[in-house]
Amino acid sequence: MKRILIYIEQHHQQDGIDLLETVRQIYQEAPYETYALVLQGQCDTLKGIFDVIVDLREEGLQEHEMRAISDVTYQLHHSYHFDAILFPATSWGRLIAPRVAMMLDTGLVADVTDIAHGEHGLELIRPAYSGRIMASIQITGTGPMMLSVRPGVFSYTPHREAATQVHTPQDLRYRTGGLKETGRKEKHSEYDIRESNVLISGGGGVERYFHELRPLAELLGGHVSASRAIVDKGVADRNIQVGQSGKTVDPKLYIALGINGALQHIEGLRNVDYIISVNTNKYAPICSLSDIVVEGDAYTFIHRLIETIHKEKGYEGH
Amino acid sequence: MKIICVVKFVPDVDNFTYDHEKHIIIRENSRMMINPDDACAIGFALKMKQRSPDTSIEVVTMAPESVLPLVEDILRVGVDAATIISDRLYAGSDTYATSRILSRYLSGATYDTILTGSHAIDGDTSHVPSQIACLLDMNHMSFISRIDEPSFSSSLARFEVESEHAVSSYEIQMPAILGLSRTSGYRLPYVRYKNLHMDVSDRVTVIHNDVLCFDENDVGLTGSRTKVVGTHVKTYRNRGSHVVTTDQEGIDTVYRFLKEKQFI
Image 1: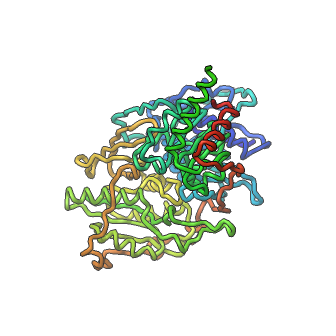
Image 2: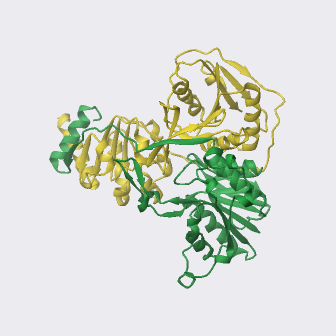
Image 3: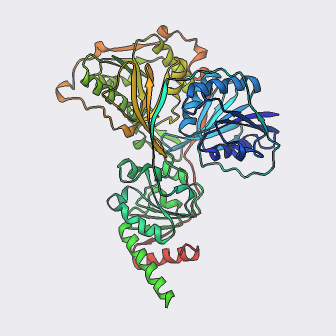
């Protein structure tokens, strides 16, 4: 029986639950047991999903105590002997996983987006060169296998009710201190592009009139998103960025305006149903993925489409 | 105050081309450059040196010796010393082996703090700063978007980290490893014209494995815990696009499509 530990980040539990799908793709039909490592967390949502919840509530075990969490994960491994340890590649997960891997002398593959079973066995697939190529990685050490997994790529649908046990390990030894959070300003975003059904997305080609995207988005019941080109220029906020360095999105409709479609951007579009791209260059990479390519200026497109929608709606009203 | 900047030289990923038939990267076109996040680390260190001129900065990199001209340019903008860790045994090291090599050098070096980038544009794993911190038993934080300059000292640093949901402020005890992010905006200055040919050779040290003394099985491909077994450009479903223009006929096509799929 394989044993797999999944780290659950405090405010992003779903990112951890979704890793059960990653585990399923790795082990397929082989029998395995799943363990959730929960710090200061609510365990209720995890019950029935994981086989074991390792529930840690000691005050010293806060998320930013990377040394403490690594120490604890190391000890847990020595009592449970995991075959694999998975972290969601969230802000904390990305910082803690490499420490744990080093302590366990084991290989870690970062930001995994796909699992393959090739002729040489298990291959963990991840983007490299800023998402321009995909690399297949194998872990060569003696294990446990460690990976961090890009949030939003795998999605888990519960298919059985687990008889969850809750373990509360005692006598954990860990080091704390050194880093202190002194303040926190929440960013208030009106929406999460990962939950949008329709995204009207702008890239370098709409830098001067990015604000014009919003009326079209509202008319189609959707939201505005952006590519890295325009976020790096400070025109759009990073929390609406689509792509490998932004978010993976799965709307039903994605309208890409002035977006070239570098691989790192396309990586964020894997589950989109329909893509319409508007570009002055009809050979831009995003165009080959599009259901409709509109060759031309995005500004003209937005205004003509809005006008047409209003006009047609007007007819229907009569 | 002594600052060590650990940096990486990377291929310029915006300008590399991929041969789709042979599935290889065409390297002739790709020049090497300093990783953008790492350039911010040096940029910040130089700012600190301006504030207190007794600050000394050493740049440390593990790289083939061919990066020497790039390293020399960094010395021409005010960095005091550079160490290139280079040995054919180290080629092919993954992040695990790389962190061990860098840490062995750093464990014998003197410094008050280590500055670096948060992630490299080629490998993109962000592992090395965390792993060096683990091996040297130091505090660490990455993705730093701003460092408070006046309070930066050999005992404490205050900084901000910008994540998707919030901007958090932290205080860290030194010595620590601080990973800057490009959003910090610190820049590596250009070499001044009069310094373009400044002789800096006496400030570069190249060290090989005879100094670090690794067993050949502990570094390079054999010392790694992961290996790349293949690379490919991702293929996506080609949707057999319908190409139109922004004239009324084109707009009508888009309108009908949106209507048929019930978006309108």
